[in-house]
Amino acid sequence: MLPYWTDAIAPDLRAGKNLIIAAHGNSLRAIVKHLFAVPDDQIVHVEMPTGNPLLIELDAALRPVSARYLDAARAEKLPAVRA
Image (tube, rainbow, N blue to C red; front, side, top):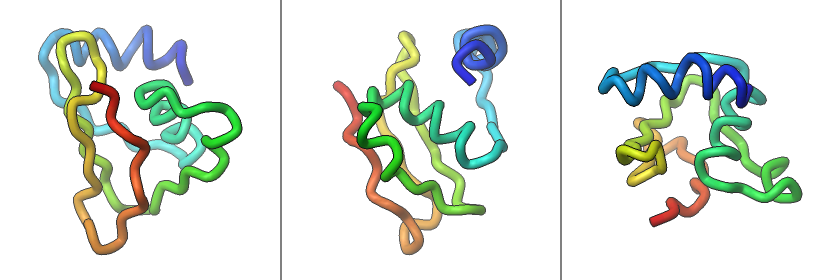
């Protein structure tokens, strides 16, 4: 997933585009692992609810500034956002 992030997703984000990324849970988990620097031993515990979009705001360096599930009632606890 990381090569796809680097080659396809990141360039569009740097160009100022807003993206919707729809993928299998494990692929999305890989992006979350990368963005939030989740350790290997903890990523297996990150559950991403099906059909609950995760809105992640990124800074110019593509680091998370904020993150939230759109359906807060069904949300899982997110990894801490790096400042």
